[in-house]
Image (cartoon, rainbow, N blue to C red; front, side, top):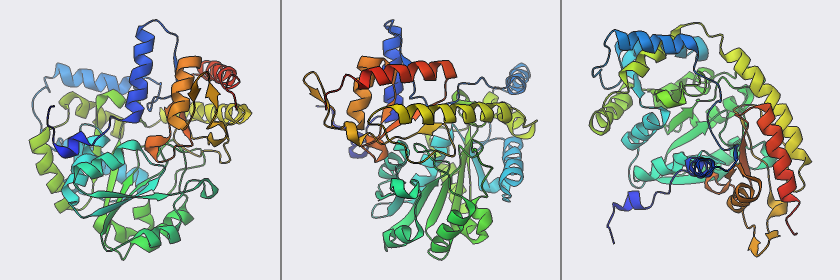
Length: 399
């Protein structure tokens, strides 16, 4: 048997990407599959951004750039952080990477070591724990129950911190739950964290997809966190640029420099043409988000109503951001279809893909095996058709 690095051998494929890949395989086989698993907007990248990429290509901007991004891109990120988050960073405190995922993986690898604990409130995006494991550190999962709206409570956080705790990852709006921390909740969490010195990592990739106004940033509410805080963000969701692979991190210069040294060895600079497009995205007119946000708002209302009509699907909290719902399906666990028993969210997702030809993601790898994640990054027509199929399939289960 092939011997692999033990950390690599322990890593599972991303559950979200695996679900999307299986749906794609079925589509290629001629099966009409409706995907509610994708974590990307179904809108096209705005024309002004594509035009900027074309101009950069025509101008021959096809060479290596500085590892952490061009000076122009770093200045554009600096402008964005000040404009949108009221946070001040210098170019030396910013690194651009091939997507936010790479920025996060590099920073986490640079900051944590064996014996360190990193708190991950769950349900959580599936890649956080993998990144921590690859750094040799340990994930400390802290469940955030439905009764709190899937939000971390300050006292729960206080109890979770131990002498080994060296970091925490916060994600708002949340993938997979759509939960959003408001100013009061962020302030309360900041009070717990401010004097601990642990690294506070804020994943903000869905920050503009919020249905009740943009919440202040935790580092703006408590500026002292900046000395041991990292901002992660991406152009993927806000500007519908998932395939362009541009993300960034901002934080203390020494931490960003360490991530830059790692990036210099494992990949080098992010794509030069995508960097030029990102500058236009960040510094040009910011009008495109409004129609996209309104579309997501309408879909959110539709999906909440449709989910609550399905017997066995429970959704006590209305998601306030991102483009996901995360219903509880525990009432369906133990159900059978033929000789197969549905034992968890992953099993229900497989059943719905096979019987309804609807792709969604089981909650197991998010830390919530009695849930499923449904993305509404698709048309209203597709959503209605998908939920019609799900209702018919669930009716076939024997409970």
